[in-house]
Length: 465
Image 1 (cartoon, helix red, strand yellow):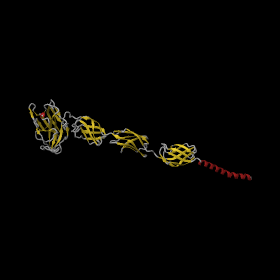
Image 2: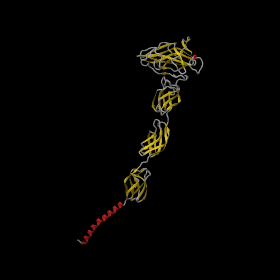
Image 3: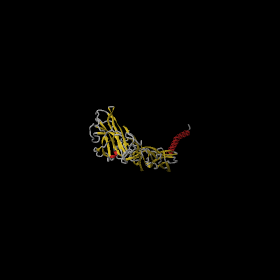
């Protein structure tokens, strides 16, 4: 082979690998020239924070991101970029996109979520169930909403609005919204509406037959008593909810406003409840019909009817009560039995009226007359207008076995009221037929009483209840 040709082959063999190596070196140098992120400061921040990014190759930059969220930025030079954290930034690596490739930081930037702020809320007061619209910012991952120390149910409407619903009870304080990034407290306070009675139904009724009244209101909490009219007697009641009371008209009821005693004081209805006590003088406590004890107490063996009559001192003229008969009927072991039958006769006495029955059982004798024309007992009430004329049966009280079941009693009476007089009938249980009146509930207990009867040209024939 030609020696020159051999030399050329050797030179070619040596130059080809050298040429390839030079190309690779050039390409590697070109790749390294794409740049790098060597650092950034600060390492964390919230929306609006300026981040200085340092490195090389910051040419033809098309985007800067943190955690995949785009930032606004300014390219200061090939080695420096100033970026601003935006609302869509998330904790993560910083990336810079150039025409030559994507540059990524070795460490992550921590995005600090801002604490919430409250700018306003409406309304500033209201009853339980009030929806409060809270305006502000950064309501993200809301953990709680409260007024004072009371936590409320709420819904997050947006990053700038929350709707919270007030709870039952007394609320008085600033509104606080808490997120993982902190808490915001309002400058103003929310105050719940105080307890109140807003209405009731029905608007009239009786204790016998018993009327149940639905009393509606706001924040009816800590209720201890319910009254009907101006008196010291309390109604039995239940509290289904803080916005309603179910109350039974009590025997002590008077026509007047309904009063509800709450933890914050007594609140009254604006309107009046009406019971059948029209015309009954103010000093009379037993104003309406009542059935206290429908059955004989265990071991008690007797009963007696009674009546009381008074003069209406707001009027004038002759007044009288005429009695034809008074009877007391009860079921004894299921058998309807007439226990007492007083025909045109009664015993009794005159008692102090102001105050009512002061000093009882002390009393003056009962003056009576016999009316031959009607074969009845007559009481001239106008002769003692400032006394209570109390009457009861003339004979011995009846007796029944202590083991007997005695209930469903009723008074039957025929009588006539004339002039400015009024009369009420009732009956009591007695421990036995001969016991004397003692302390309250000791020897006798109230059974029932009627409404008051007023003057009429006709004779009353009453069976109660």
